[in-house]
Image (cartoon, rainbow, N blue to C red; front, side, top):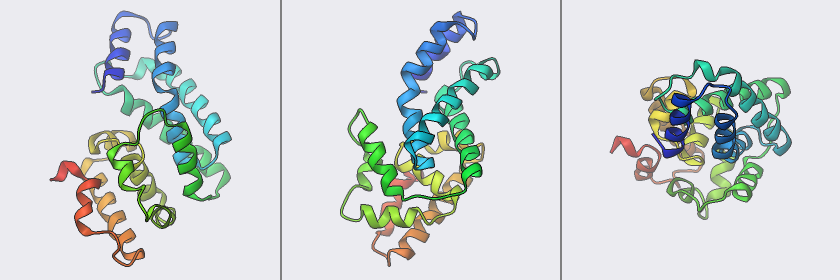
Length: 198
């Protein structure tokens, strides 16, 4: 569990769920991350802002349902992903994932994670064009892993599925991308997608 989750859990143990201190801490610690996540899924900065606001409104109303002591980040990401899925169902359109990456990079306040660095080489444009062609369930799984650096366990919590399903989606996405890019992605690099499987 990350230190931000520990901070939220500490506050929830000492205060009522509608205490302004909890809401302030939640927004301060997670607003930027949730905005980047929404941008990664929705491809639109305006909709990402709306989805981010909706995510926190939903989280505030459901705080009493959160199990104190568990992974708050994964719980909040699950709300964000479900909120974004609602937006996707409403508009039913796609844009280039490269536009998303530009937004993500502009918003990032920290250096790229090792997972993102893998995708920022010479093949970045071709690779993300191929990622954009994946089904939503595979694309979102890849984005959570490679852009946001979530662990397999956290992705399973966010998507409300089993860890083995996450592994399966990542392996399937990897092989589909490798096929589309004519084998230009080395098979060994799957360890960067699923490092826990080493």
